[in-house]
Length: 197
Length: 197
DNA sequence: AATGCGTACGGAGGCAGCATCCGTTTTGAT
DNA sequence: ATCAAAACGGATGCTGCCTCCGTACGCATT
View 1 (cartoon, helix red, strand yellow):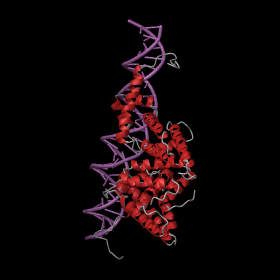
View 2 (view 1 turned 30 degrees about the vertical axis):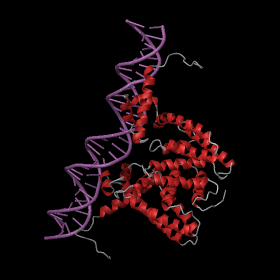
View 3 (view 1 turned 45 degrees about the vertical axis):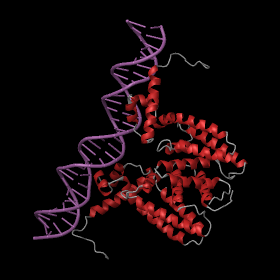
View 4 (view 1 turned 30 degrees about the horizontal axis):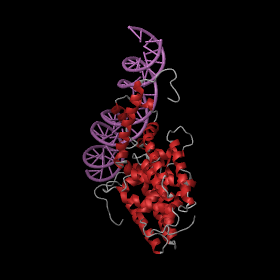
């Protein structure tokens, strides 16, 4: 429509078809078996050969990033709701929760995510989303610091790491109660003198 | 000496020899390549066949637990020094640091460790050490609570998880500065109203 | 020294997953 | 209907896991 971008030839139909089939199947497998699931199995169930899978997504990270793209949109949607909150402290809290759920979408996801977060070269397709999230977190932190609810020493990156940690622990199968206690501990860490214990 | 335990035959010499050779080689490989290192490579470098390795250590966890046994002794040694500290808060802090270093001895170690910690059946050889550590942590926590330095809501298990998290993050290659900021965040979380920010 | 027995060895082999390469098929354009 | 580009997909080679079993070793006995 806006930017007519069809130079030369019209793209083949099977390309898009295979791509979406792969993405759907991959998401199912990631959900059921974690990020280390067999890519061969994904290809087979999607009804394509291994070669096709690797042509579309050269690495496991590329496939993961593509699948995660869908989830990112949900996160952005939640972000809109969070931004409407009046209390910045509450906004930060909900944002951390949203990130945590995003991180623990698939078991084993935090590992490649952290690998991408520390990477310098942008060859890892997960790197950009990570930096976006850190920046976003920092915004919420700064807003909450202005109202005095959060210690000044806290940075967005710190809470990004914390959320990632909790997601990782969640992925190891820890019970929900221990998890919630850990969240509380972290909250006590970034909130300004909250004597709730 | 004390309990003369040599029923029937004297144990063969090569058994002990191979065992120690395997342990030494395994520790080197774990250090260099993390817990997911190739066991075949370990066996080859130790000068034994794969069969011998698996007879001595039926699973990767068993080998890991055996290698970790050496490190456990270092931890116990540090514990003696920590117990001599007058300030329980300081003791707790140092204990957490010691645990964290123990957990991050090999890259990737926190994962099997957490898997063992949540396991019910004691068929996992890492399970017992884990429960020991949680109990020990709880002791330090309670001592520090008596002097009022630590929030009453905190449990040993919470800080065990926290230490494990930090160790995991360390293993992902995060820089030392971010790591230290995270430690501070957690410390602010368990300490009683420490307004250091 | 020589023999015998039980234990431990170790490598061959079957399996699964990764990643690639290339002959073949599909698809859109003419 | 024909063509050429583009995409397909499976055969292939590789690495690592783990097991099984014929063989060799080491300790005890004579």
